[in-house]
Image (cartoon, rainbow, N blue to C red; front, top):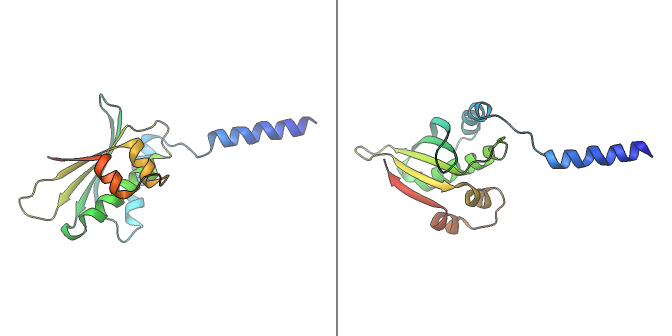
Length: 141
């Protein structure tokens, strides 16, 4: 009877822990390969994880093709949410800084609420249009 209870205990622990959890350094190291393995991904210029008054932030800087700006933005947020699932500590915001290939156009900062963005790209609970309207905001740098 003891092996049965041991099996139940180990099974429940596996369910609770589920996915492996990575440190911020490991997440930052995993981000460039995530972008380079997909041929439709925008060029990754940099990554950063930091804490503000609002909470933890996961940020990527990308080089955006003006003809694919929405696709590049969607890919960047999708990458952030995919990687953020494996973080030891949850994020409060995701930030994508879009550097355009247009002369004299300043970079555009897109700030997304983490929970809402996860609901779009990971759990598929809301539509892309609703996410675009309600979960993100644009700022000029």
